[in-house]
Length: 192
View 1: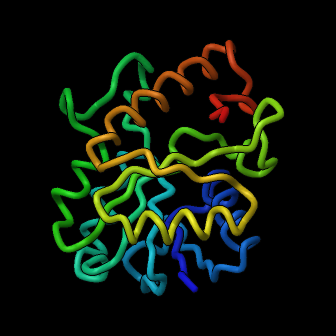
View 2: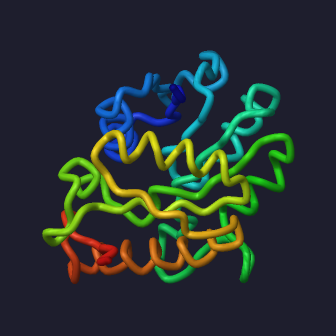
View 3: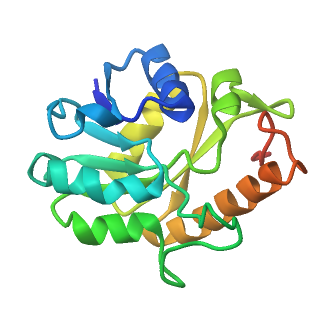
C-alpha cells in the first residue's frame, strides 16, 4: 500500500489526510516548523502548503524528494490582489516544481477542491472529484487508487501540461469564494 507524507497541517492537509487514511493508507504529517528536521517517510509527498512555501521545502528536502512522487496542491495566486497567477504565462506551479525536482515525479492534484468538499465527499449532491495531472501513469493510478479507497472520486486529467488549466480552475474557484459568490463548501463538480 502506498504511504504518504503530507507537508502541512492546515485544513487542506487535514482533509487530504482524512481521505487517504480513511482508505487505509499510512499518512504522516510534517508541520511548517518541522520542515528539514523530520524525514520524509512516505512513498508520496504531498505539498499541502501555500505556493510561496514550496522553495523552502525543496531546499530542505531536495535529496529526500529524489525518486519520490511529489503532489502539488498549490494554486499560485497573487494573494495580495487575487487577480493573477504568479507563475509565467502558459506554465504552472507544478511545472515549476518539476523543473526544480528533475529526479521526482510531480503530479498536480487537490487544487480544484476545497477542504470541506473533500471532508464531505460531496459537492452539490455529486461526488467530490479530485483531478490529477501528471506524466507518469503509474503514479497517477496509485494516487487515484488511494483517493477512491477513501471514498472520493478521482479522474486522470492528462499530462503535467494540464496543470496549467487545473490552476486556472483553482484560481477561478478561489476568487469566487473570496468574493462570496461561491461558498467554501461549494465549488466545481464533475458530472458524468
